Length: 203
View 1 (tube, rainbow, N blue to C red):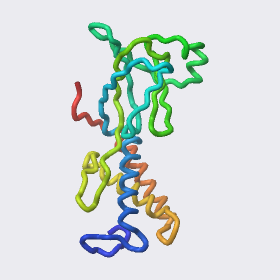
View 2 (cartoon, helix red, strand yellow; view 1 turned 90 degrees about the vertical axis):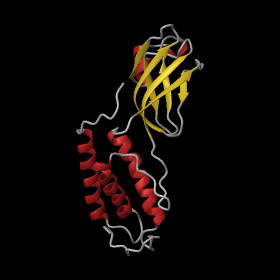
View 3 (cartoon, rainbow, N blue to C red; view 1 turned 180 degrees about the vertical axis):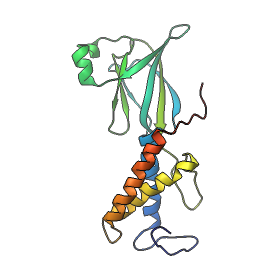
View 4 (cartoon, rainbow, N blue to C red; view 1 turned 30 degrees about the horizontal axis):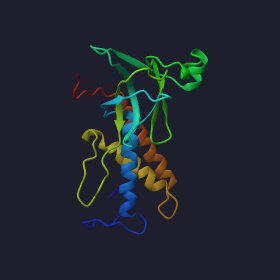
């Protein structure tokens, strides 16, 4: 409707905008929304045997790590919050950390997908990696209908982001002035989400 496309049911797309264009734009912007806002956080606990270099590859569905903690194998176990750092910082303040296994104190997120975590220093014993992470949403399928996996009252933000992508692509669909407007509405919605307190469950 926003793009003045024919109102056919079911809608199968047109020369200017295909159904795959719509689906992919919505899916990409939904995942970008999840990363930009941290609106939906999932706790994951990963058992870790100490790898030689302390690198932990994460599953493909993890797109951001908001918090991390190391739980050691003591009885009872102790939990150590891991501060975000990078390897340059570690080399500056903890020279030789990569060759000195101990209880991890910080974590570096290596971003080329799939995400990989570098524990600093590498663990000297088995333990658990306790993460608060942002996961990708389910693959969208307009033929069956799939929940977006975001709060209903912020679904409009994803719509404006998808419109920005559709109007910013090359070809006859391109309309840069409207794409800029839609991107501004998306960014405004992201800011609203960031200042909106929302707790569904806490332990």
